Image 1 (tube, rainbow, N blue to C red):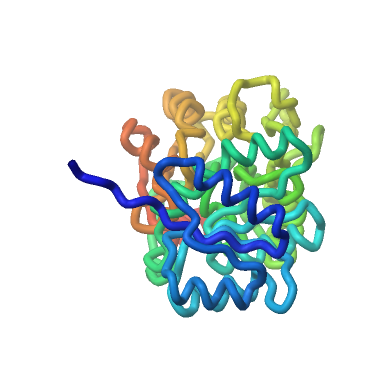
Image 2: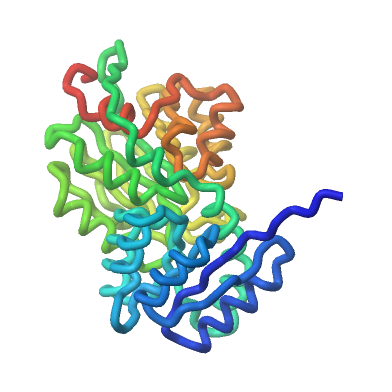
Length: 343
């Protein structure tokens, strides 16, 4: 009988209570185990070097050496999938986003109350498994190949869906957009509540286009990127010559993802066929149903290729369903959107 080795996890947090909580959640799964814990960043770097875990959970705010500093040192020595564990504060969110930009695979929020702990117990094992299978070095060393659409630039709307690995992909794509980008861009990124506002602010500071967290009733305009707020669904409402953002409550769909890529993509149907839908890295199948609807209406679907996807889940199901006109690496997506020859 073949015995599969367990996923080896290093847990890093300065709170003894939270370390015990994470250890309990992880060790309760039959396919993973905690091989060590650390209470600060310097200890995390040392144990990561000695034990070579498959994946690490990393607290953001710690004494002596922060989670961000520890992540940078670990990624420089031996790239390892790291999930950041962040408190829901402005400072914590900004540092977590820096960590995601620096190579962290994903983020989970520290829970508040019993309900939050149950949600963490359900979510963390899924994220650990996805992180363990993620691609790190390949995504960051591929050169940006040039690609052009070979057709007039006539999109009236661009919608983007992403999950695990999405923040670093957006960090590549959005700052590369020219100031005169000819369509509004609406992004649904799976990320905990409290992170989309700081994400929009950071991207706005680094971009030629304006980047904002989407607000209910906000009119859509070309050259602006709208980040769907986490904790609710973002849709697009079109009436005659007016198009605006519509923020919907979680109960409009049974999707566990807030925001849902399916909800965003389906709401873009009134713009079809002049819609470009881009499915980036992420685990699961969110976006598949919406992409099917857009494809039937004549919209163009682009998916990130396996070679650069941190987690090849969301793009894979769209590609295998035969919905994509183009399968592009992240660098090719950047070039496709940013090149004036494409427009």
